[in-house]
View 1: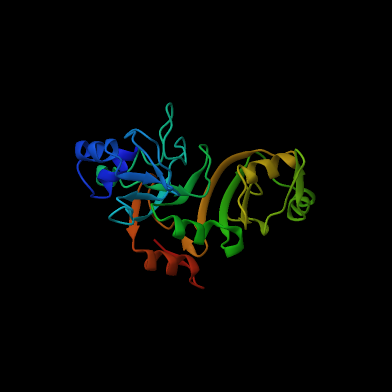
View 2: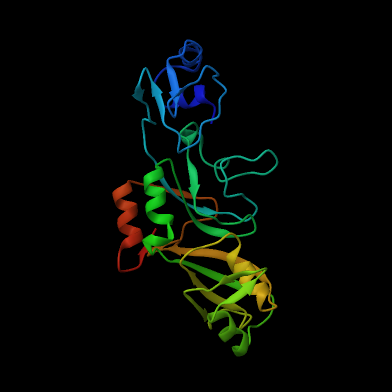
Length: 241
């Protein structure tokens, strides 16, 4: 986000007044005086006005059912992102997606402007499991299922899921599996499938921890407090949106 836009979003001043504050040297980014209002600032940057840290006035925690064809990114010059499809009320709040969910995939994703919370739920050391429903182009044999469970190597990287189980009540039978991941590397499920000579047809993230997608429609969002969302993710029982 541009520095002047960030300052305005923090409630420091209107955009033009923010420009003046920057030009006059009142603003630092990571301890460095910045005099360019168009300077890009990242979520991890420390911005100060006359030596005092400034932050967004409202921390936001959203759950979205990401549609297929939308990028899990803050901005992109050619493609729509999860930020682009949010209602206008969330403009200028510096939201970003937590974790990865590729363009061809759909399902549960969290958006926030709280970096500490994002790390709390996304870092592998926190032990929060992500659950995916995966449809393959052809039925998975028992031999290949066992191979997948034991972990596979794709392009020099070893990847092992927490679990892989067939979903027996979906058709075509044998083509649907539930995959649970602890780490969630970029396109990990698609790469694991390719390592055993299979390809993913449809991929939906259904759960983050014990927070379930439930009946949230494609592109729909629901806002929570941090405490509510942390409880839903970490509860020992299934919680549906």
